[in-house]
Length: 555
Ligand code: ADP
Image 1 (cartoon, rainbow, N blue to C red):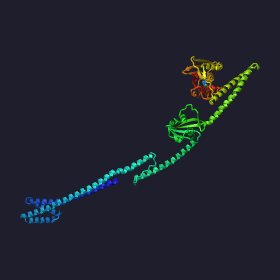
Image 2 (image 1 turned 90 degrees about the horizontal axis):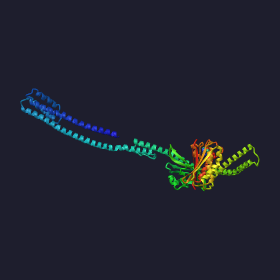
Image 3 (image 1 turned 90 degrees about the vertical axis):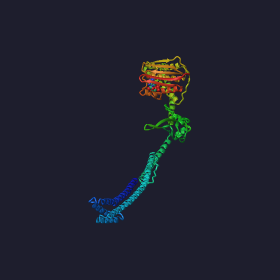
């Protein structure tokens, strides 16, 4: 439209300009042709009249110009004046001496001149008017076109940019996932079509989004149902540790409702909730949790799973696995072991006793083979007693039934007792036990029997895993208000990777060929020492030997 308008402007202006220029030039030409030429003929006739006597061809010039004038009659009265001139000229030819004829000729010529000059003035006035009206018309056309052009200049960008900006606004809304956005352009041009196409696209996207949302909602409620039906407690946290969800079990355990705490910062809740505090704490030992809920005691193991998205952690799921049935089974097993080992102790002791009686000469003389058999029965009975003893200790530890007889005790006595107990075993392998007990030792607050049991266990292991003819050192010294016991051997040592597991129940270093070992000794030792408020540790290097130690508080 803009271009069409500009074209019309150019055509209109050009046509009207041309029209007026044409008209003005036509009028000018007419003036030249009609009147200016007549004036020229008149001037020439006047001049040749002056030269009649002096110039031979003056008469011819006159006649020639008279003829031309007769052929250029344009004004009213010009014909009569020209005819009169011709008549006067003829009379002058008849009587050239009569001077009145010359006067008449001149008068006629002047008349023709006047007529033409007046005509020139008149025509000039007409041309003036034409020029004025041309100026007026062109000024009006110019003003109108200028006004229209200005409105175009001011409105045209708006007409184009208005729809473009509402379209780009719409596209930005779609990019921001606002699929409800529509554009309303009430115009039947290309912009209107574009807006319609945009609205159709937004409608389709909206439809797609709604159907996807419904699907996601369905999946969400399905997963929620599954999580809620689980017997394990499940708590979801986001990357900032805000609570996302709790299932029914964890609601019961925590005594909190999901609706109450959802979206809250978990450590804030932990301030008022003990279980939440335990759950958020990093627990390297991974102890089972004993939780009293629903009027009964239940056991749970805590598992923290990181939720990741392309290696980026976007949250955590804390799983509280209900291990109560396993606990109950474990308890039954421990009770069974305790009962069996307790019941076995008496018959084994009586086997030992009977074997000793058999070696008594009063019972009868035994041959060498019989003596060997009896020694083997005694060894096996000893081994069985050790094993049942350990199993009994272990079951006591597991059921939490350790009976401690804490009293001030002399560390040197404990060391003596332990060394005496393993002396025979050491001698058999030619191992020397060197005990270095510091002089300034205070008494310790300890259960003597259990502490020597631990030291005997350390020494037995040291002898067991040392080469023949080597040495084992026992060192006891004071460290601030504690007393430390160390047993060092120069045996095969323990691989670094097994050290963290060495105090675990039933753990034996792979490749250990020890028929008598149960893998319980060190775990019981740890329980005994920790029950007395002490600390136990190990350091070892393969090929160099091992050092086991514990410390107890001075009395
Ligand atoms: P066990 O009754 O089988 O000896 P322990 O709990 O006393 O059980 O020891 C666990 C494991 O630790 C053993 O099987 C052995 O492999 C390793 N171990 C204990 N003490 C030593 C030591 N002084 N040197 C090398 N290995 C040892």
